[in-house]
Amino acid sequence: LTFFILSSLPLCLSVIPLPHLQLGKYLNSTAFHRDINTGITDRVEVYEGEESVLLLCQLPVPAEEGVVVWGRDDLNPSIIHVRTEEGDYLTDQNKQYVDRTSIQKDALKTGDLSLTLRKPTFSDSGLYTCTVRKVGEKQNQTEVQLKVKERPPPPPIWPKVLPAVLVPVLVLAIGISIFMCLVYQRMKKTAGGCNSV
View 1 (cartoon, rainbow, N blue to C red):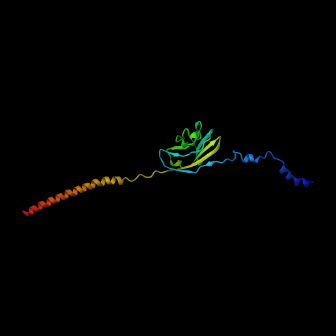
View 2: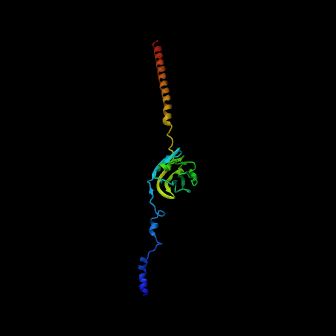
View 3: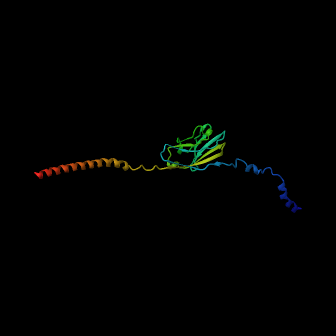
């Protein structure tokens, strides 16, 4: 009898419903799983000291409670710029970017979430993420790789200076040669006249 009860136990458990184990609820829950559309990385190069550089980002935005967050995961804090329906939220902005970033005021309406970064420096080089959120959830995301380069050395001055110096010298040399030639011819004529006498 004991053996029969024990052998039948697994079968009974498989039949008895277990309401507290609703696995499907958690597997399908947006709190644990959500497909995020990640864009292909865009690459931008700019010389250090330029007035500004534009990091492009155009993504669908929720009709309500939409937020765009620009960030860099290699920084702490990682927040570069946050734009909400009420305006810019820069409380948690990385100090490296204070007073150097801006997003269009109507960005959340137009979907143009591009970030303007003023006076780029070498330390601004890195991978930037543009993320659209709604109530804390990621909706869409794209990436921009920024590389700030050193300005090339100025072109040499001598190609411009050399002609300016050589032309007057050449003209002077030609003038002196003509003058010497005329003097020589006059002296030659004078010497010839003396010999005939």
